[in-house]
Image (tube, rainbow, N blue to C red; front, side, top):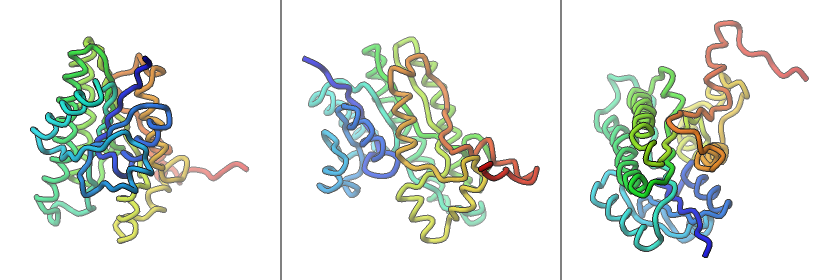
Length: 259
């Protein structure tokens, strides 16, 4: 009997996570969504097409372990893990950034990523097979006014490389993507309340656009595919050229289209 690839997506009810669910369902994977129950609904389930949903707070150590065991018992061993559970940070200077907000970003985006990797990656390593993709950010590479989110995403990048070396000889690949400004529901909400300006975010990008969630999902899908079977420990930007274009203002900015 043919065995389908089993892919688990944390934070899979919205944003990049939901795009990853749709991508992997579309290519024939059995996809399991982990998220908070408050983020899930029958309508969401129907639109994404996931095999199952489990209520799971990535900060709850025991719950993460229990759900991993339950998934294995009910669906079989996990082949792929995508750690999309995370939150954005409000753009505030340090003197105005509440420590409870700093702690929330750090705990969810870093601790939650580490815990998910540790639980599922250890099982993969014991079986000698598996692949993980974490979500870093272009703020992993550049300074920004996001004094919690930026350092945390840099830590996710470092964690990814460390785990790739830890488990590489056990058959487990660990990579990360570094999305640019991506038009998720959370980003749209930030735009709507005036915290972000789409023109300011897209202007430094070589392609002069925001990134769409499905574009990030496509890159993640590549890193989890056999086409990337010799790739591990990388942080792959998916940023519409923001990193390569962000300093061109010093030379008068990028040129417009030639046509």
